Image 1 (cartoon, rainbow, N blue to C red):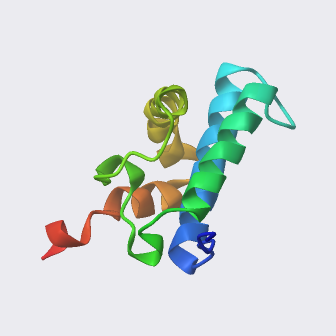
Image 2: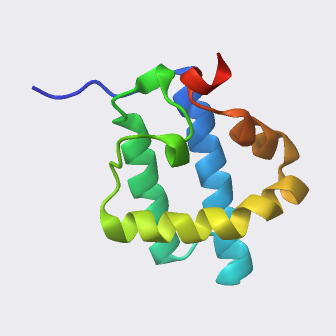
Length: 111
């Protein structure tokens, strides 16, 4: 039985944020101007697929706050590098995305 893909508003916003972070990382670290390099393209494809298959769907928090680690170890390591590098830059290049991502806390912490 196949799991239904998550295409709700929250998952779509997370996909946009992840895409922008990977694009920014590749532009700054790999000096790509138009398209991302092959490695970053593979990471982006993998990350978007994992978001589509997230078991929490529209109830998800930021992946860094998640109790379930659904990334393979090598992709998790690469995504950590991207997040650590791109996070501060997002405040400059995409401040709205950065604030939304920072505010995406687990539902239990908001009560």
